Image (cartoon, rainbow, N blue to C red; front, side):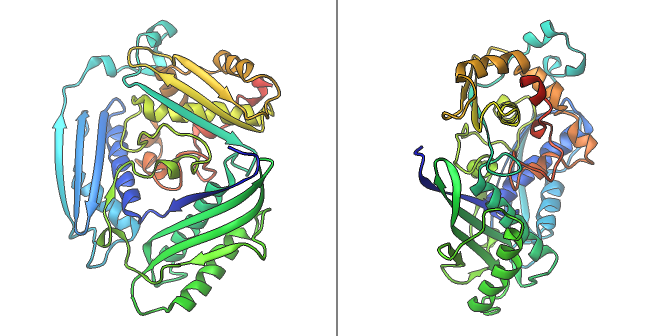
Length: 395
């Protein structure tokens, strides 16, 4: 990436069909782990007008109704109309129950280091974590602002501040960079769906969203839109209804929204719908934790951490750090520092973040909250991988 460039990042509300699928998949993970923290569960979802399809493979002692879980998510997202409704949508399921395997029903809190060494990553994956000094959450500014806009427009719909809005909306923010630092807001794009194709007209919709969403979000931001900032609100015209009545959804299709808005790399693997023994999910959290602590320790202004796992090994085969010329020491030394201060073994990640027990500690709603507005960079949730408690030791 050059020093001077422009980058756009996107976010969507929970009413987006792909995000609905992510939330349903993670609500299933929450449901299983709340009852049985040793559950193994993989859940994927697809949906379209009036139909939801769920495929799940599991080994668990939990009782469940996948249809009931899906309907609860759909209703909470705000879909109660005739075109897509929590009560009338058909829910089809394909499930496969696997035998309980004692090898995976271990209590990570009681394992010795030697026992942890014998628990391998079950997948081959290279995960990435990133942090930078562009906003309070140490996230890239474009995706941070896009998420703030999406959360606000969802709020205006749910709280009936703008009562004519439907659950689905999409936001996009472009930031112009100089010397790899945010310089100005290049563009803001919002596409919002509405219940009535005739009311309100585009002029009122655009004025309402400008006042209730854009001006509200940027009120406290240090980088403000200027006279040259391009603002587009429903640039293609009226977006009637939106959601599954208009287009289909699939779990794992919004990975850049889930991570860093394409400012930094991600593995490409879906994060939602997987229990904590999937290293392609929890390895991404561990990499973010490491990168954020390095930046918080003021050892770099930008940092990308790369963890490469093999199926048969408990710890990553490779730990790499890239600081894009901002590191206070060489990237190789920073990588060594991470290996000395962080335990990237699968069982250690699960133990340190309490990943099997967080659903029960959060009334059965933990992973599904991650499924929209990002798995990383969340200041609204108490996420263990967002803590900077290792920064002092790294210094």
